[in-house]
Image (cartoon, rainbow, N blue to C red; front, side, top):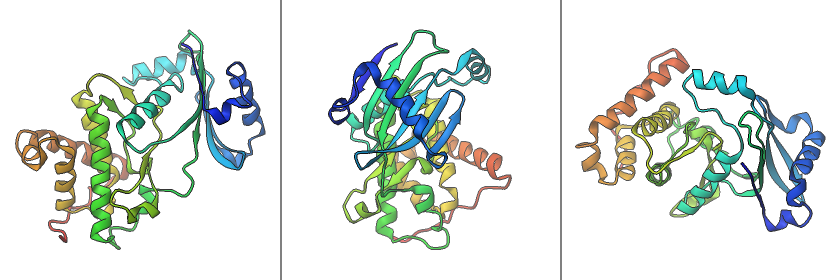
Length: 280
């Protein structure tokens, strides 16, 4: 498995042959505060270059033990940065807000020893939706803000799933909002952490349920109302709310069951009740 991509501003002083050496040098100079992850053959860190902030992920090979452990747990192991690189490119083509890749390289044949790196721009000035919505239950946002974000998430999910892509960690913490864009008709809300994403011709039902169940679960403490859920379903479903409450009703019931199960497992309590009504 081979592949190299260097954005024009990176190719000026980094050649295709020395991407791994350059990445290793960056990693060796990183301060502890800039290292976000370093285990299971993957290191993630932040660095600055020519006045701009970036994230570097280095995959050094997960090893056969980790691969077998994942397979025994019925999970597909992440072998390299290729998943993230392909998913970012696919989402950009679909018009889904996501990261921007500045550099990528992958080398090797042995799946347990694949080496790869990916560099993405730091989404400076954005905030995760988990943090942005943290106090919504007690301090609900303006209706216009609530509606814009519901539509944005539904549109991103619909485009992604419609193109055969599933995220596998589809939570609101992995959407980063540019708060200034809320003044626009459509806000900018970037989907990140795509290293486990899968791409097929068609997204299987079980993975649709997992993604949507995860998204719902992660938003349960945001003071969701019944109308919020209906709005999301209407914008996600190709057939609108009529299809969501008709032919697809069992699907959405299963999404809710998955979300409730995740909530009980994570928080050891029952999910919060959904508010019956809503403004507007």
